[in-house]
Length: 556
Image (spheres, helix red, strand yellow):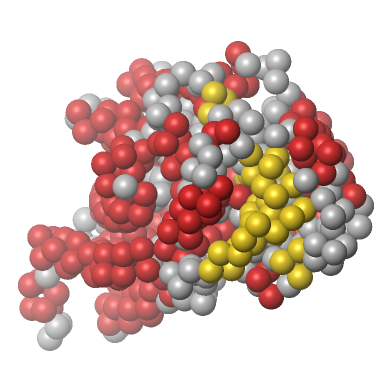
């Protein structure tokens, strides 16, 4: 009671200011460090960011999905390089690559906070709830290390809030605006498809229960789906219109794991989540959630909480067992016809974990003598735990944005070659091809999520002798192949340490490489030219601003 005057001082306006300042401070290091910030490389700098740069440079940001991007693989369609027309591209266009990335990240956190706050306040917590609960949970959710630069995970609470409003016959313009914008700022194949499925199940549940069709709710689902089809038209075009091109994804081969491995995967995704959809719930949230619903049995929120928890458990089992037994066989047959990963329900988990977290804290705040103080401690501990996973902290031992892309160094290479970049092709050895692509080089290799199977087979002829020397690399390329890289069995995939290695024997099929137009090899590992007569070292490039020591070889 003696602390109540402090709690009352923190009204909604004050807490919103605190939240926005907190988000601002969270992203301040990105602004102060600029391109010296250390961003995530895996599935980010080595792919997503570079794809946007190539798309921007090509001038085909919003052109036909069949437009050819000549910089990669000798020419791939817009739909293969970038399967969506989305809002995130606008910020890259306006602010440049690094600052566009930062602006997208900041916007993601603001949307995550606003969506989670209003969702909790209106639909999952009582009106007289301890105000620090929706505020604290929403702020922590907004600071999760969301992957890359789209709203696919962080925007889901706001979308669910809008759908529930329309379901309750609240026809406010902002609800429809959110449902229109979200598909233009998120991925259908990551979270959108699975969210639509969940909302559709909710719609049919309402129909069965009430014996009536909620026309506005159905219209909202229809609008949501239609805008996704528009924003993902390149992807839709590639699958339905350009279906003559067989995707390399049809050769994806999911291994058949044992029962114990399936159970372990289930437990792992349930306990720790997935790194593309971090929820960071294992240390604090899990014990609190289970503790509350084992101890406190009488609570209005218990019914929907059990429903949410059941969804997480079922989808975790689905994630774990999709590679087991006959399920693996069925899944392999499915993806050979429709190349979509069916186990991505986990992209919905972060939103649901934090709804459960808020509900549990609400129970604690009213069930114990010092409940509110305990809630504040738990919120603080989880807040600190999430900050520990800040992108710049997790990647503190990695490369900076500036070091990774090394624009000045690659400009020196371009100047040395002294030919129009479109007139020759390169491959990258012991480094990500995205770096060369980012710097305007035309590459025969690359990391592309959906490209023609015939190109995968054609490029494989170049690296076949190296793949034959390493079973792991061979399986990696043959059974997946989205990283269509010039692999060396001596370097494997250890690119960050490649400068410390010397390749003694590079068994590429250089005749095929030359036939495909490959003239130069940009390598971070020195090649022993005595043992490899088909390559000639032209120059070594070292730059104090770059991490890489680059050897430029000519294919002869």
